[in-house]
Image (cartoon, rainbow, N blue to C red; front, side, top):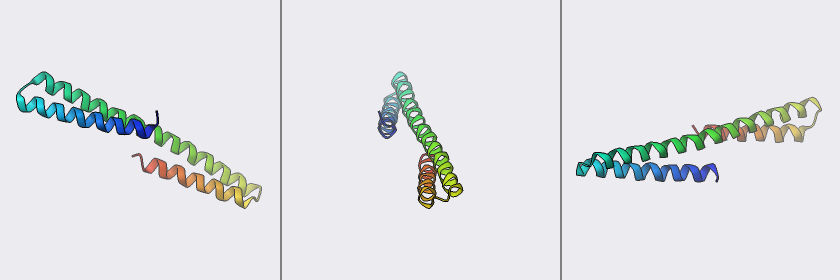
Length: 99
């Protein structure tokens, strides 16, 4: 399952939990309220795990790109440098978009 899918399902779980929690609170059903809170927190946790995974992938991509960029500079290969820099920037963007 992709991280985007996990994130979406986590959002849905969080929303479902929030609704259940609020309905439980509204009707005075403490158990329903607590079950909703647990479901809401599970959804939040699932989203955070997916974001952390994406940040890790971004960091790896950034480091690999930086290495390729530096190797390209050492061997005077401009195309390799550009590809490396592009990968490095892409990795940074992945990390930034998953904070």
